[in-house]
Image (cartoon, rainbow, N blue to C red; front, top):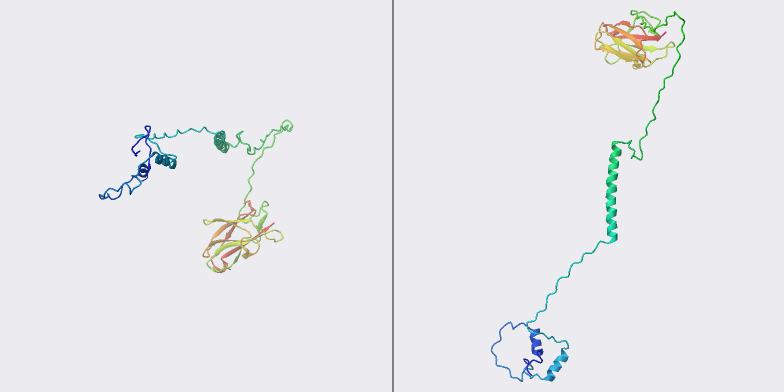
Amino acid sequence: MSDDQTTGGVRRFGRRDRKRSLDPRGPLFPPEDTPEESPQSSDDSAPITEETEAAEAEELPEAVVAAPNIHTPKSKPAAVKTVPPQPKQIMANLLTVVFLLATVGMGALVVMIAQDPYTPLNPFPPFTPLPIVITATFLPPTATPPGTVEPTATFTPLAVEASGAEPATFSFKLAHEEPVYAPNANEKGCNWSSIAGTVTDKQGGALDGYRIRVTGNNLNETVFSGAALTFGTGGFELFLNGTPQAQTYTVQLLDPQSKPLSPAYSIATKESCDQNVAVLEFIQK
């Protein structure tokens, strides 16, 4: 039986077919014409008998039996299955939505409280002071005898006397009618003109913080007692100009609330260098 012989319509694969299937490629270089080999030099030319086919069948227990022009069908792609959402994933999505809604609501609440701290939605409202209720108290009128005219308040101006006068309403006065003139003791020397002095009580104690107002010759200045210790405790000094001049000024002592405590005195300055400081001494009566 030859290789081309078929049995029962089914072709069997022999050793030649197996060699062809294992080495389908042809030689790299075409073989030269060689004389045909003798049947004895090749095992492939040996006659194939039923025993040989049986042996080959035993060697190839899984022989490939194929019909000519039979193609293997291609496999279809597997269908994509849609996995339904799990309960845990649904719960996580719900919690996320609830958290976002709570965040938006909290932001809106903060804005409302910032605009109106007294809103009822504010858990910590600011303190509201209690209202003050003022009630009127009726006082009965005092009985006055018939025909008596009730007194009315009248304003009586205080009389301000001329310079040098000492009315009883003033509690301070100058210790001397005329100022004491002295030369300037600082480094300016003769390039100086000022009005200075002290303010003391009845026992001679210094009084600080009292006002001394000096006006005249386009001047309206106020100095405080205790600000110039050159003239002692309770001393004061007001610089007038850089050269000694013969001028006239008005000087008056006031309390810390600017109430007049002494008359307005007329003080004259000198133009000599050894009398360029006019020293005053206010004392309490």
